[in-house]
Length: 118
Image (tube, rainbow, N blue to C red; front, side, top):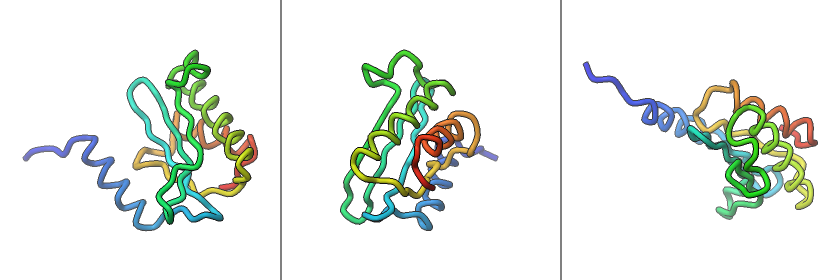
């Protein structure tokens, strides 16, 4: 019996999550994407289909930490700071089909500490 690939499993889980979670103008969606070397986060208004704020470990000033747990914490703080500048304080967290563990959890905790409300 053939096994389903990890990316296919993550995609299926993410679709299931997205059925229940959506971002509005008052409470946009904070979504996480994790690659092998980097981690990215965006705050998205799904009603208009716009990315309001984004941060990624491949940005020039954030590149030093890469996509490890320390880098994820830095991305969370940076994203929360940029969101606060735009007047965003409350978000809905979308883990993107990944387990709430490791880099994803570090990013979420850092964003909470920096002032975002989930």
